[in-house]
Amino acid sequence: MSAKRESKSQAKAKESTAKAEGKPKSRGKAAAPGKKATALASGSNQPVATVGATALRSRMLDKPVFAQPQPTADPTVFRVPHPSDDAAYKEIDKLNAEHKLFPLPFPAPRGGVEPQLTLAEVMGGNATAIDRITAAGQLVFHALGDCGNTKGPATQNEVADKLTADFNEVNASEVPQFALLLGDVVYSFGESQYYYDQFYEPYRDYPAPILACAGNHDGMVSPEAHAASLTAFLRNFCAETFAVTPEAGGLSRTAQIQPGVFFTLEAPFVRVLVIYSNTLEDPGVISDPKIGSTQLDFLDAALKRVKAEQFTGALLIADHHPPYSAGGHGSSVDMLAQIDKVCEANGVWPHAFLSGHAHNYQRFTRTRNADGTQIPYLVCGNGGHGLVKLAAQGAPAIRAPQIMQAASATTDQVVLENYDDTNYGYLRVVVTATQLRIEYHSASDGLNTKAPNDYVTINLAERKVAHFVAPDLGHPMAARAVRALMRR
Image (cartoon, rainbow, N blue to C red):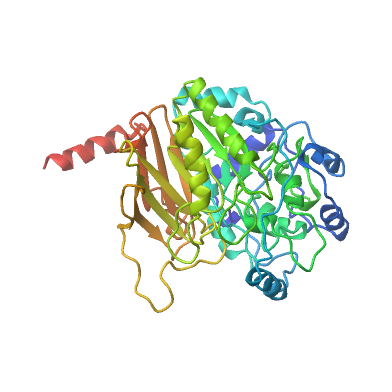
């Protein structure tokens, strides 16, 4: 968040949070990653199980650090110039036309068939924070995709500043506990030298953990480079221990400790099944002969555990490529069919599906023929990269809501409920013991706007779209005034 736009109370709150977490004193504006750090980042080709060996080159810590101890002004230019990738994309287009592009293999995550990570572990074993969330009866977190940019920091800052403003809440239960990035963190090929400008710098003041799905651009390898897929992503999001990596360029945020590119995130009231839809532009691929079926095995094990433990909280699936998409990026039909097959076999379906990839916001409702239950599929790929219109150039804008797929003997009805292809934004997810509410917020609304531009609520038990049961935030005078107006 820009220092000029931050209140004194926010700055004071961040300062006290930094002291409580044992953060180092501010060193001022961080230096850009040096050539030595870049060489270390691009020269590694280690599986996830040994990422910790690479982290020895980093500054090891005994607990995580999130935001800088003091807020700083938004940057206006990138520290590391990003030259054009046109030559690389021309080569990729040629390979694609010749059908020579395939999904790339990835290291096996730590943790067996169903790698698991708890929010308590992400918070460095902070059991008090987890108890506080549970006692409040509500978990809030952010989700957004395609947040990297090659042109400059302006749009990244716009989104990151509004995300950070969400921590300025009167009621503690409304404060977000983490962010989940839905892929394409760093463009164009997940290069280590761009992590500072596209990830660490924009989120330097975000005072909570940040996890990530890997997107196609995070795993793609430029035809002009000699690099291994996902190298920098694994080091910065799948480290074995909390460490400040070379890519952080002197900023304080520690690497995330995800077990790998697919895993179950356990948090109060929710489980998020994170999967990796690989490196093709379209479609998303989670299983084929070249990469194996480990992710289908993971989904099967995760859903079996949901059933065996009689888990009654919200169940989400998150990846990069959307199962449903209108506009330029198409739907990943085969990927969804594979996921559906596993869900059908276990009799367990997600309450919602979150994706990125398409550079806009889209919300779909799928109504299952089998039992009439409803699943929202949300695309939030407008986290900072260039926006893309749903309608083709010169064509009229798409009307919403409208049926995108009609119900039949073999297909479920899918309705495009709403979209935004003109603004950058993000999702704010609110989970209680009985409801899942997913809000969409446009960054252009300004830092102090708390009302969402779009939202959907799912009743967890009935698995249908429902009216949101609003919490009592302790404003009785305002509530009485509203009721008086309604009686008139």
